[in-house]
Length: 268
Image (cartoon, rainbow, N blue to C red; front, side, top):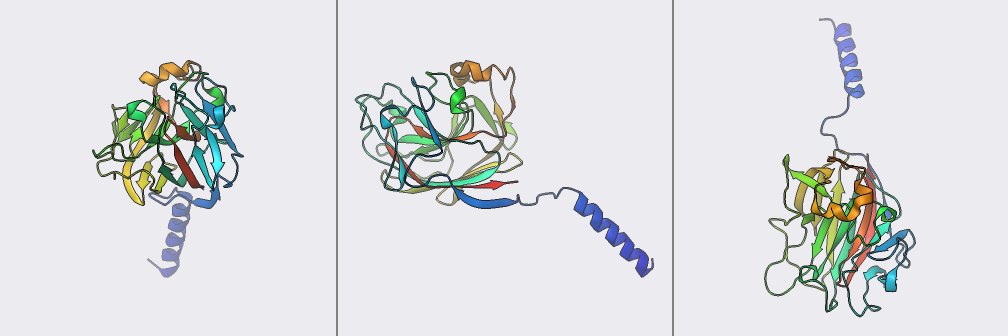
């Protein structure tokens, strides 16, 4: 084959490769952006069970000392008033990073399982679409746990209210899946939480830089027990369908916690 013909073939192959989608190529990342200005709740929407979206009952969520704090200073009892603080816009593919720490003490009627328990919800329904008394949004949760007693209590589980996920192609049946190697971290310690949601739908959860969960194929699951609390929203999903975007929310479950350095990097 002559040099000119070889050159033509290489040029054609190069053009074809450029036209095809890259296989295994890293997602293109935008700049890191802060979701919290350090001084106010601008851009965030509270939704607390028993109260409409936008009402910050008893100042459950407050900005103080450069962090978003879940505070129960105005409560006498929790009374299952589970709450969530939603960022104002939905996201599809991104990296999210923040730091959190649990404080002491919770309210006396906080359920035992909710002690030192909170999380970051993502791929969530909007706060406006939640029922008035709905305790949790239909979403995926990167669960954060603090220590409670002497037994190991690994942080970094994935929980699925109204949804389901798959590990290595096998759909998980449990509501919460604890990490095999998640650490138990004492209350009062700042913890670095990182969440990566790729355009492919693959999800990685990291604690202090170490991956503790990898899964994908997130779906809305109308058969999930939690779906009954979100009848209006779930009416649009008579069968499981892929869930590829949604809102991010910080959780209030009856135990004080702080979140800071909340940043996002969108991917495509």
